[in-house]
Image 1: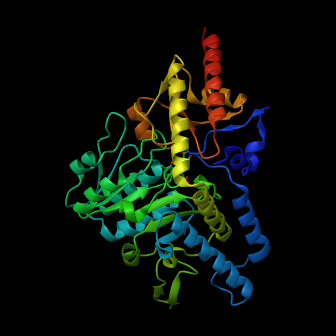
Image 2 (image 1 turned 90 degrees about the vertical axis):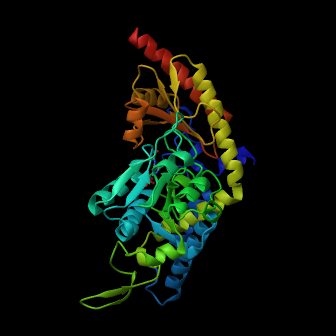
Image 3 (image 1 turned 45 degrees about the vertical axis):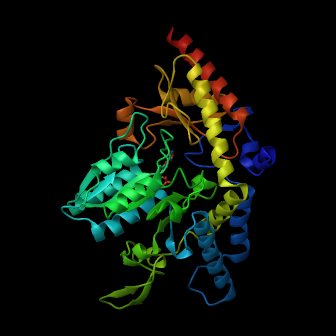
Length: 408
Ligand code: 7TS
């Protein structure tokens, strides 16, 4: 991969920030967009814009074709069938849809959902709330010392009452990568399904729902170089067939009377109302773009940058690095400058053109476990390079000096 050529695909990365080279290391929050995605969205609006499924004219047929082509492109990214991909607004909506639809089907007194204390609120709250509403139990897997969810720990809490095991593939705080294939085997042996929050994995590594034996997978377009406001829920075909709709309205029905209705097949049954057609087109283009670059290469290079950054940060006295003590397998590095609030760290780094996220990262239970109210987080992606790591390390070192002088 020619990195300079790849970076030049992303118009925003060529800009300065605060008069400095822009060092964008917040891709776990959202990724920058390549020209191929910007062009696809523009082309859709300029050439094919119409509502899907409704029109009989050629323009409407093209819009519908674009939308369904996008579904096929997103399906291909995760090795699913197109009919197994529901378009949503993003991971959050995918997980809410799943918890409400599948939860309604299978949860009740005497049943349980197994999850972990390291989940993003998007993969905790939908299960927490549906469990409360249905009188089901929510169980938590014990994390190991690195914050890792292991198949052994999952095995200790699942039982015959478990209906769903809901876990993140990659933690957005610790950067740990969960052994999904092994956990799928544990879940299936207990008769449960495995629902995976792939917000931080699908953009960054090859994810094959068939090879990993995943039943449900949620992910967001905007974290994989696509537009905001679009995402997907993959569901195994035979499971989607059994699930009731959640959003009722236009585009999702077969026939409606004043007293009843029949609904389309999955996935259309779950997509009530006019969908985000341009967003889907952009997400499809992003899926193609990532496959062209190569997810294996994306994964290994961003993990390498994260390892360089973690080692460099550890060498700065007074900096605490969280997450795996050994080799990192993802692009996420979370840290603190001791005695300085993470928001102040992020503000200081911004003055050097470095964009990092600071806060609780929508993982308050995990932050309590780490004993930190907030942390700073750098997250690398396909367009980052060793210069970004160096710019980050220099900015952290100078921020640390600045706060030491202010405190002294
Ligand atoms: N799950 C994980 C693991 C995430 O990291 C995020 C977003 C979500 C779910 C929700 O995705 P959304 O697209 O629906 O918002 N995580 C972050 C983050 O770490 N910083 O900003 C957003």
